[in-house]
Length: 408
View 1 (cartoon, rainbow, N blue to C red):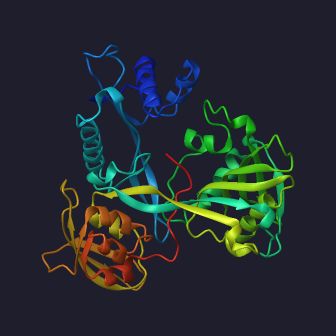
View 2 (view 1 turned 120 degrees about the vertical axis):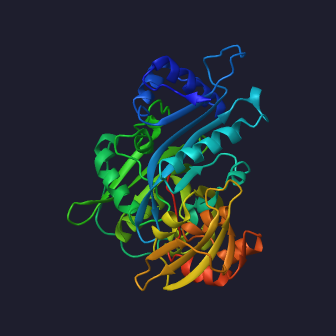
View 3 (view 1 turned 180 degrees about the vertical axis):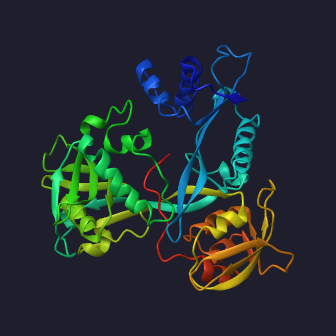
């Protein structure tokens, strides 16, 4: 296991090819791989190599990590360790390689002084053994627009069709405003591929040509939201298109309503699909038929707490009070007993204590509680919490459901 030299094009290409194969993707052209390298020069890329393999320069396992800000309840952001690109070749399964990689990343994050590690997962059965747990969920929506009549408020402002280049900066400014208010959102820079691929400028995005982009401006001409979608034709019936909504971000209620109404009332469309939407999406309250919207819920952002005092003191709480929590952690990073003392402003001082705990919480449960979207009583029913779960809920629950609007 070693770091990939991102300054070495050949070393990066071999690593990138292994990652692409690990996620069942086609081999990328050389120019695309080189373009992607420019976006990861400062990231931590790790490969596991087997000198006896037919291509020893190509890793048999990988990770890709970088520091990013995670928004916590109250709008406070904390620098965290984003983990991505986790692959193990089919030829090297069941050898403990994933464990070596992930535990190394947790040690790295801890050594860097980062209190939280986080990831979005393709296989949800892998990561709980390393202390990760779902902290933010999302919903996939399927909407029968022929059953929908708008009953929400009159929409204001103006919607414009725009190009990806027009949305590059205006759209990112909207995303940053929303990120500051929503626990679970993660920073991604305006010049980074994570953002660019959301608006059709991602490297090697073959689907970009199919995307349509619209921007909502308020009455003063200030951009307040945007949507990215594509239309899929039913060749047997031109009036039966499906609109696939890739992204809809709104910084104001007016922008939210206007963009959704634009999507739902589009001519020649009978179905709208929208993936990765907030659990507390108010859409169904803006139309006359609740049952026109079919909902599937999925886990999305998984969180792993490494430094309990730093993580818990970075968020705000629902009420003042004190609770003593004993945290168990098989890997040892978070093990300890901690007093959480919340003042009248909802800010907490968290410190190690020898006092008797009010509750005992596994480190996985701490990750789920951190963003305020999972009930301690739910976790207690699953064995992740013992003791005063009701008191934990009084402090930790947030009135706004956590949400992450993209994959990384």
